[in-house]
Image (cartoon, rainbow, N blue to C red):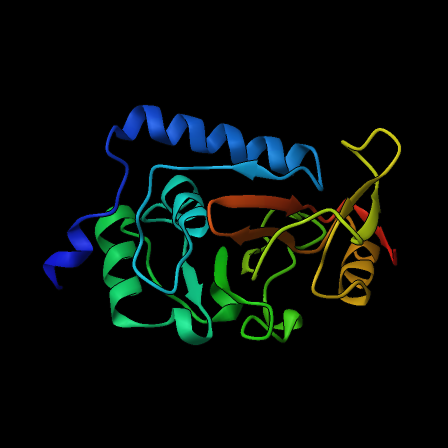
Length: 190
């Protein structure tokens, strides 16, 4: 493990983690809402927001799948040191992180079972940017009328929502911003 992986965690872990958890919770409870987060300085190619989400949500009992360029020594060392989370393939992941292309195919991840729908994966999708402008129309729990969020595509999210109560949850990250799309959200083209 390189000494660089020892840095970049929360400076004031209890306070930073509480703020980050609140931002993740707000984003998941209000699909399409973009939250700004801070407190982590993860190694590339992780964004600040992806690092914050991993520090907040992962622990030694939550296997993480690193997809594509995110599966590198610096990221593995950083996650291991700061969270203790083990690594797995897509089928065993509780969390996965990577670009939209890298996390494919979505059917490789657990979607829960009829008895335990909560035993599904959450994918942290690194995006070039997050915006509501020109984005897909979102509706469902946590959204008063509708919301908008630019997504990498819409068909995959419509298929995912049709699996409810099973399915995947998504956190989109770009720089220091994150947004979420739980499986309960209905997605329509803009």
